Length: 389
Image (spheres, one colour):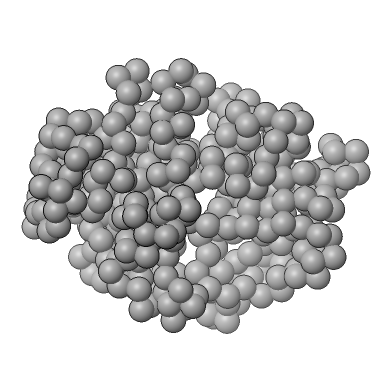
C-alpha cells in the first residue's frame, strides 16, 4: 500500500509499505477515507521528538471503513464507517476504568523511553514515534487499529466524512481541555492558539456554557475562521498587549479559564521569544513555553489552566511562583478521546459542532509532502491539510 512516511528532519515522502495485518484478536483493519495533518506532527518533522525512524508512517487523525476484524472484536463489524481516536487504549486497565484513556497501561508496547523521560509511560499513539509505541500512522491506505471496540466509533449517517474526521483528535482534544479545565456557565475563557485544537476548545467552551470566549493568535485567516465558524471573539497578539487586553475585557480580573493550545514551538515576539528560540535550537531546553507563561500570568486568581499543546520535556523560566501564589489549578493531558467522542458525534449530528472549515486544503495522499510543506509554512492560509488515500 501507499503511505506518507518520515524520512528525516523536515522530510516526508510517499512510499510503498507492507499492508497491515491483524496481529491480535481485538484488532481491526480500517480502510482510510480521510486523514489530516496536525500541528503536533510538525514537532516530529522538526526533529523535536527524537524517536522517529526513517520509514515510519505519519498521521494520527483519521476515519474510514472497517474491512477486517479480529475474532475477539464484538462491537465493530466489517462495513462500519468509523472515526478512530488517536490514542490507543485497552478499555480494561485501571486508567481506562477512570476514563484516563491516553494513560492506558497496555496501549504502549514500548514504555521504556517515556518512563525514563517522565517517570511513567502514557498509552500508545498512531504515527507518533517509538516513544509512544511505534505504531504505523494513518497517512496510508489501511491502518491496523488495536482494541478496535474501544477506539473506533461508528459515525452517524448525518455526519459527513470531513466533519467526522476531526472528532479523531482536534475536537476531542479541544473538548477535553474545556471540560477538564472546569468550564461552566457564565465563565470567561481565553484560548491561546487558533489552530484546529484551539478553535475546537473555544467551541466546546461555548457549548459548555461559557459566557465569553476569546481566542488569541496572529494569523488573520485563522482569526477569521474563529469569528465566522466558531463565533468567539479574537485577539491578535501581534497588534496589542494581550495581558492588558484581557484585563480590560474582564473588568481587571482576568479569565476564569485559560486553555493553552499551542505547544512546544510557540511563537512569541520580543526578547522572550528570541530567548526561547535560541535555547531550544541549542537544545538547552526542549520546548518553547511562551504561551503557557502568558496564560499563567493572565489567568485570574483562583482560576484554571489546561495545557493542551504537546510538550516533550523541559522548559526554562516557568512562572511557578505565579502559579502557586495565585492559587491556580493547572492540568494537562494527551487526549482521552474515548471519553468524549460519543458526545462529540451527537453534537456534530445536530449541527451544533461543525469542522469542515478546518480542512482548508484537501488533496490526494500522493501530495502529502506538498501538504505538509504548506501546513508548516502556513502557505495559502493552510490550517489543515487533509489527505485522501
